[in-house]
Structures are given as structure tokens and as C-alpha cells.
Image: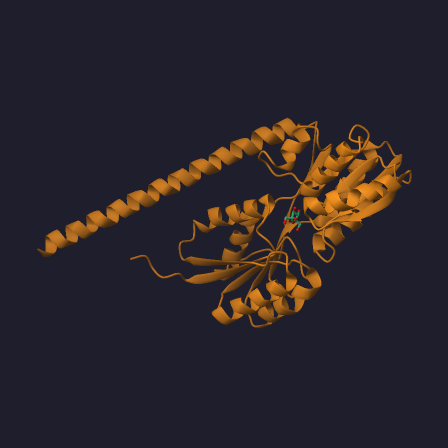
Length: 326
Ligand code: FRU
């Protein structure tokens, strides 16, 4: 029989309902397959901060050796994460932060840098003149705040580019479909829309198209996921002018968690890089991510084969032992 799990990792996830979080989870499971002595528990807060507080409480009652958390909103999730940390349970913050310094390690992109890179790209694209509209992520989530601050800083180098209007989204496409049309009618002079993720960027493009503005207004997003419905494809199709890569970091989160649990040395801040994906490099990105996906599928097939062989071997051993005993 396999040895009982040695460590329990609890993952408090703000939502699992989008492709970016699914890619994160797939990365986690891939990395977890190297650690058969880990029990992995996921609780999905469905974009609800109160629910996320309760779920982290549950983890405390059930007993975990390490918490990974992506905070739906920074403020409301901070006290409970501090409590976990103060009880001596290591905390790995993944992507969305709390407001506290009480955590063991952070894994994820630098959202201020994402915003800054977007701001400089946009300023350059508009050749230093134009009007920009920003579609923000959910208020209270750290990436929305940091992307906004970084974007404003990046644009500051281009005094001829104005951040004219804002739409407050919730990371999801419908919020943009509902709120953007009125703002665009009020500001027909907008040249470019920067949306805090590709799903909202797609919504912005669809609104522009419906209003007959898609030839004039350019749209830039964030995430740059591979796949048919990912940002890389949107850039390839000309739906988005560009997207900023924001890696989900699932593998890195598990790797960091395991170093902490095994008392190996680790970095407190594990920052994943960003880059602009636009027409100049989208084909390369597409080919590379497709290659990566097919290699990951190969690894998964090898693991399945290995598991089948282990099972066969184990049953042969049983036969051998019973023969020897007879
Ligand atoms: C996925 C997502 C991404 C975004 C990230 C920010 O749930 O909305 O699109 O980059 O969360 O935390």
C-alpha cells in the first residue's frame, strides 16, 4: 500500500471559473504529481470574500500544513490569513495579495510592472498623442490597484496621452458589455482601451464593433493565455492590438510550497516576468506555447503509463508472494 500523505496543502482560490485559473490549477496538478506524499485540498470561493474567509477558517479546523491563497479582495481576506500565519502555518500568496506583510512567500507577476509596461507600450503606439480609456479589474483586488497605478506611471512619460475615462469591471466580460457603451458615447474621442484582462478586453472589442468603432479604437489586454479562447489567439486574430503576459504560476506555487515544507531555502518574493505580445511576436509565442502544450500532454501520457506499469507490477508481486506462501 502507498505510504499515507505526509503533508496537506490547502488552496483557497478566489474563483475557478475562468481559463486563467484553470491553467493555474493544471500547473499545480502537474507539479503535484512529483510529490505523491502530498494531500491537496482546494476550496473555491466563487468571487465571494466572506465565503473565502469561512473556507480558510474551515482549513484551520480541518488541519493543513501550508496554505496557498489567492485573495478575492485584499482587505477582507487579510485578518484570516494573518491568523493562519500567526499560528505558525506557512502561507504562500499566489497572484492576488493581502494588505499584510505576514506571509511566508509570494508567487506571481508584478502587477505594477504589468501596468507600467502597458502604459509605455500604449504611449509609444499612440506616438505620444491620444485619449485612453481604462477598464479596471474588480475594486479591492490587488492586481486591479497595482495595474492601474503602474499604467498611470507608464503613461506619465507621455504628457500628450490622457487617461480620459474609466470603466469599473469585475474581471468578467458581461460587466464591460453593460457599462462600456454609455462611457464610449460620452467620450467619442477615445483612441485606445486598456483592459485589466483579456476577457474584459474581448468585451471591449465587441462593444466597439457593435458601435462601429472597431477600426478606430485599439484594445490592449492582460493575461496572454494560449489556446483558442486565449489572448494570444485574440492578438493573432487582430481582435486585440496587444496583450501583456501574466503567467498563472501554478507550478511555481507548488514548488515554493514544497521547499518551505521540506525546510529547504526559498525566496520570499517569486516574481514571474511579463512581456508585450503584439503582431511583431505573436506567431513565435503561438508556436512556442503550442509546443509546450503538446510536451505537457506527452508528460501526462508518460505518467499514466508509469502508473499502469506500477499497478501491474504490484499485482504480480501479490501473485508471487501468494505462490511463495503456498
Ligand atoms: C483570473 C483573473 C485574470 C487576472 C487575474 C488577476 O481570475 O481575473 O484574468 O489576470 O485574475 O488576479
